[in-house]
Image 1 (tube, one colour):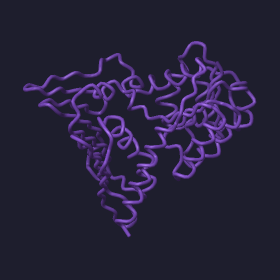
Image 2 (cartoon, helix red, strand yellow):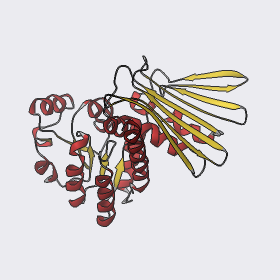
Image 3 (cartoon, helix red, strand yellow):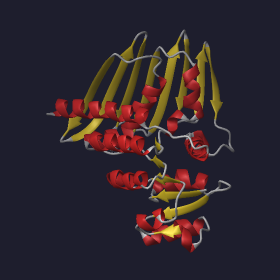
Amino acid sequence: MKVGCIGLGDIAQKAYLPVLGALAGVELHLQTRTPATLDRVADGLHLPAERRHRDLDSLLAQDLDAAFVHAPTLAHPEIVTRLLEAGVPAYVDKPLAYELADSERLVALAEERGVSLAVGFNRRYAPGYAQCADHPRELILMQKNRIGLPEEPRAMILDDFIHVVDTLRFLVPGPVDDVTVRARVEDGLLHHVVLQLAGDGFTALGVMNRLSGSAEEILEVSGQDTKRQVVNLAEIVDHKGQPTVRRRGDWVPVARQRGIEQAVLAFLDAVRAGKVLSARDALATHELCERVVRAVVDRAA
């Protein structure tokens, strides 16, 4: 199975390549426009020269079975378009694009060509989060905070807060009939944002503070007098009277803890089986992010 990896930044190197490089039956090809990075990463994976590509044309000439896109977001529309037009199933690091119109076009193109398109919402596969789907979820609270990183609203929401948005969508136990957005913007930079989704019998809150003094990610789901808390995707605390703590095992890889390994395997298994994956649900997350962006911008105006 020939698999391409486009873009060799931190996420590709730390999260995806350790998984892809260890899979039996996968012939891995790398592509980046930075020769020094290409050779350094390929050397670490012991890849021969014929699997190192400096441009997309060279990579596409390999008759790929699938590709992972980890290039900068601004480059996604062009790269993903090329892959889909070539009939190559594509797994794209979130978001598909900064502009909703581009994301809509890519999803429509994938459906028109009958080619798989998947978006890297790995938290849906992270064991601590996936298990929360079996817990009572009358109230859902997710915080994903940073230190000293206020940012332009669209970039912050589409590059980072999108994980919070998608996790809430994944965990809400029913249709959402109310969406509320609150935010603080100063000098054009988004300091914090709060998203509330509500429906029959449930409320979900997503919070991101870029000046929180702490880099952390905490998910809490509660209902029927029980609560489950997941801290930094690694520690699970169940509350029912007395708290019970479960921590990530010493030998559990970070990629498995964060759901990346599972997402990669699910995508490649679907490709092998000839199953076409749709990004239509992922598009719904992008649509909600666009709604958040517009609310934040309107509030700042």
